[in-house]
Length: 100
Image (cartoon, rainbow, N blue to C red; front, side):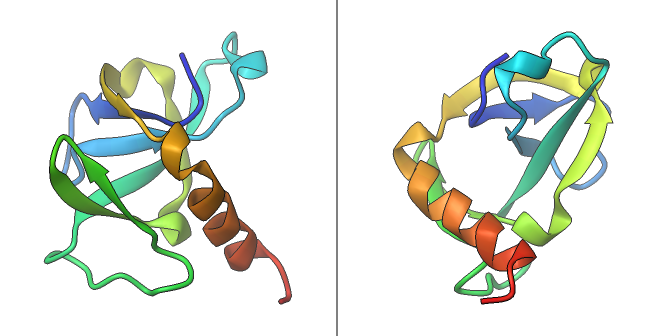
């Protein structure tokens, strides 16, 4: 399991791709922190907290405000890795939880 991997979800209900956010140090626990990735048309992104990323040629919004912990067993195959977008993703996460 790798931080910033884009993963398919098993038993998907609406969201089919998530961004794995949890550090590899915690790979032994049964849950994992993820952020949904959704097509731009489904929810217009909020500029400072929803960076737009490209996954296999599809533009998706990182829905930082929907961060959640799910059972690791729900994670499917790795589709991509967004290390290239790490700065923008972490900045958006910071905007969600900071006062500035």
